[in-house]
Image 1 (cartoon, rainbow, N blue to C red):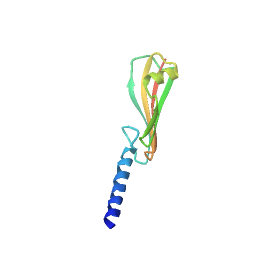
Image 2 (image 1 turned 90 degrees about the vertical axis):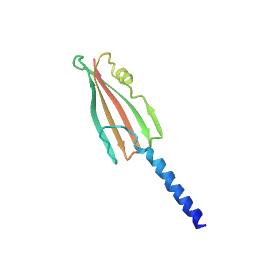
Image 3 (image 1 turned 30 degrees about the horizontal axis):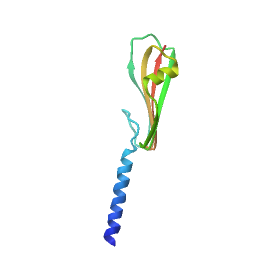
Image 4 (image 1 turned 180 degrees about the horizontal axis):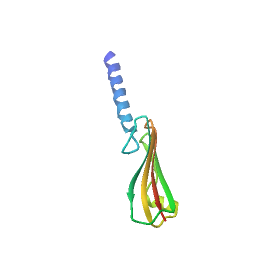
Length: 108
């Protein structure tokens, strides 16, 4: 009976470890374990100064369920942009539970 209890305990700990391994849900160059709120530049072009801004985001819960369109095309459409001046990104997460990755496009 003790062996069965030990086996079940070890199986539970192993299952918990594997399920929590997916909790790093937002990729970023500066990730915090408890919380992340980072903004960083990605691409700049030689286009003229930006007069418009568009933002597109995708969200994730526990690294298990994610939804949204954080593409450059979606951000361009959201801002009514035809010529891109720069592309930036933001990443935020809390305790690896809920995370958000956004693409911010500036242009005209």
